[in-house]
Length: 234
Length: 181
Image (cartoon, rainbow over the protein chains, first blue to last red):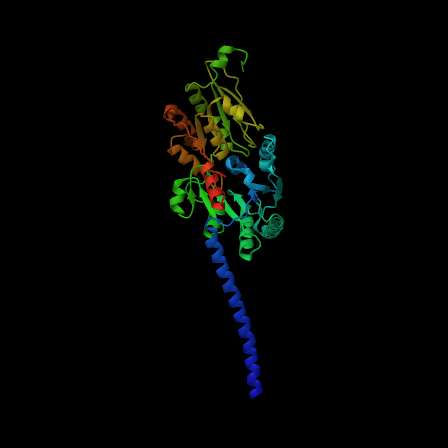
């Protein structure tokens, strides 16, 4: 009778310990996630002096034009090295970024130019692809995104809309939660979005995965109060 | 097209139509109608140049008689449409933000035609907002003739280009760079 009791007890005990561990760890992770979200919404006050490695996610035509307009007025010596990422199917955007980086070099200002790299990323789903095959391609795209992010570990991320930026921002957020790398993530919604955020923008806004989200029309600011409106890029 | 003739160069008024990097057959079809050509001619335009992209609908070419009818020509793609935009007196464009802002920066009168065949038609948002602010005219392919005949170019307001500096300053401040470092 007694031995059966203790056996029963030990079984309960190990179960309890397991449950306690799971509850404990998930509580810790939840607290950490909330802390990261809270901390991300506040400006950085303890920053390493010197430039910050920066990831710039480029999209197709209009998106890239807007991003280059923003980069043109940024003080590039503060943001280096710079890593440009575009979809593997998009050759134009990286080409335009290269032209911009070359023009920095021509200004003979090596300080400003710094080093820049250009990379392509697989897209999880091409236009018109079937949903069944897109499960496989999504896994490949995520693995590729993770691999790139482990290599780059950027301190600043600038993106403005293409779907490829969502997995990159999610991975960057996970890096913050896990303490691998703290990054400041900025998302500028495309000027083409006047009344509604794009799906990428909405996801990152709702999940609170970006530090600051900019919109380019006051209507959007009143609809999404946590967004910033400080004017248009174009 | 009479480039050698000084007089015809001065009186040349080009309408440039652009569909962008894909195709927009219903726009090309709309500008290729007799009534639209007639309306443009009555407004004083002499040439119609169509960038038709990957579209399958090929418009008709007309040599045009000076003072009598519109001359019409087309091509598929060009590495840069900037030169065409610069030479145009009126631009009729698809709703992509790239060509909208390129045209507005050149301060050319612009009619944006929204492609209703696109699945996610968020593009009309931008064109309608800018039309509300009187920077351009917004039309649908089947309404193009009407838009051209009633448009009043004098009612358009010049678009003041945006400025990215406030966003850049915001980012700098947020990361902890002071602005006069």
